[in-house]
Image 1 (cartoon, rainbow, N blue to C red):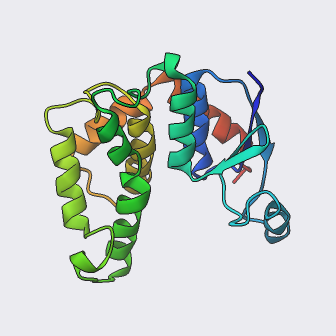
Image 2: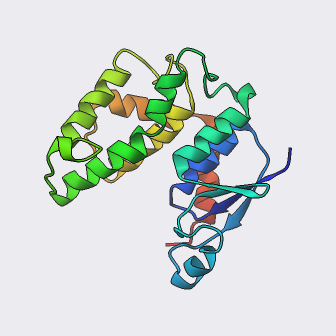
Amino acid sequence: MSEYKLYYCPQTRCRTALWMLEEVGAPYKLVPVNVRNEIESEAFAAVSPMRKVPALQIGDELITETAAICLYLADAHPDAGLTPAIGEAGRASLMRWMFFGSAVMEPASFDKATGRDAPAGAIGWGNWERVLETLRQGLERKSYLVNDRFSAADIALGSTMSFLMNFNMMEKDPLFVSYVERLTARPAFIKASEIDASHAEPA
């Protein structure tokens, strides 16, 4: 298998994609991109018009959007056991939770943070209270979201939860805290965090 190229900027969502690469054990190369620098960001537009990271190069194809990268890698590396196959029990749940973080949690959390009060039925992500209740139902009496086994959905959604709690944008419910602690204790997460820290600029 050829080496993946991960366009990478530290202290961004790139750490989630890096965590996923470490979990599946795939060979990869980091391509540094400073999306905080306007000139470099404009140059990166030739690769990704949104000028956002992460972006994963696979041969002649490019995948953007963190959850999509995680899902691709899970399917491409079935031996890692991070996703039920199409048609297997839990596949539908995996698809649901894979995109809950970016499509529902993030926009709802920023609505809450900025005081925007849109009717729950008028937007695609409902409201923050419903987000929290949905998460509680999904994690109640379980260690993981899908088939009660660690999966790519835990990487995608757990990263979002960890970020929001770190910045006090999400309630530190004991159920959520224990879930995130289980995820961040994984060796692949720890290694990805160490790599991320090694690329960060000194304060």
